[in-house]
Length: 434
Ligand code: CMC
Image (cartoon, rainbow, N blue to C red; front, top):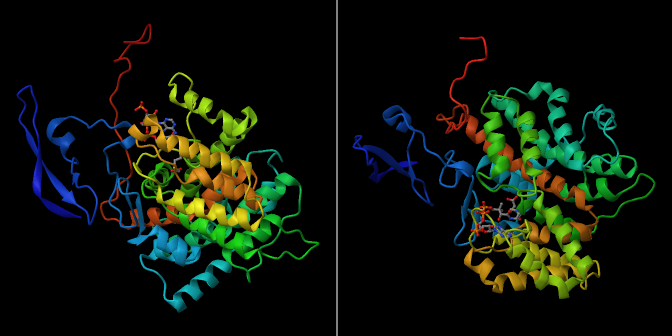
């Protein structure tokens, strides 16, 4: 970051002296006012619940222009990566800052493939969960438990440990997600098959059985790879900020990523794809397309507590570029599987059409986000609804690690410690005490 030409001046109506604060510019995007000395100079904090106007760090990984609807990973537009890239090359890009050349790409694919198995003991740990546990509950436990199984790579201040834990997390997440699925449906775990692609291997671990050969469908393989690319990183969202804050205490990368998994689970974040599909199912049960208008009235009624899931975003005030790509993928997958007339897809399109024309949504700049169509694609592939967020977590793991490693390497990094505006009782005395 570099100092901007101008400075910010903060003045007070009570006659306290005004103070000047430096302004910094990034490469693109809004400038920031540096308030680090504000408390020292004025004895006051800033107040910004939900971080509506606060940049919590500097980062060179992902850039979003919410007004334009643009998403760049290390400068590359998401559309180009989704149409011409591959997920593991995208992981390399996010982690290392540049796209790999042919040799680097081959070596990286090989390296990740060499780490796809998990310690055999992990299945016994997994077997302690109830079979009907939500996969995200299981995933939070399993990812946290990786630090117990791989304690030779838990020193966050050691670059080699960070490197190997990054590869382990990227390589093992598909295995763990598939294991939590197989456990829930009572089928044998499928060991990874390293000759397959990252997404092909995941499909086989999910849907293969040991008594039959599994042939990977290339359209579904490509669709899944694209889903992974679209979810790989999204700058300082709730789960990524959670991973950074958790990691800022110096805890190990597996523990920090487990915190990210827990945060992602919520319906306002990664859980929205599951919530969106449930919402479409509910509208379908109400009577389908003919009931969309009625449902929209509920959404617009602030007292109903009903939200249009898969719509709206803190940063995008335009169409989420990932939603466009996801809609394309949805078309491809449904055509491949002969599900062009999928009623939920038709319903989703109708909901989108009505919302995009309705003043409530237009005036608030509410557009479909990535989760609006991703549930329909995943469901068509055969992924159960309660595993959608697990798939999101698998794909986002690389973003979490890239951001965590960037933070550790930042000379300005400090343990995260927000302050508060205290509104509770001032000092009281317990009866009998002074
Ligand atoms: N349905 C109906 N109204 C909405 C919606 C929605 N999905 N989203 C926002 N609004 C309204 C909100 O009620 C508010 O109205 P008003 O100004 O009258 O009070 C206005 O739009 C601004 O919304 P906000 O709640 O201040 O916006 P936010 O930035 O705090 O919330 C959000 C962003 C994503 C949490 C929210 O849009 C939402 O809950 N969407 C549904 C859940 C969802 O799809 N989440 C996935 C996000 S993308 C993937 C990811 O990052 O995980």
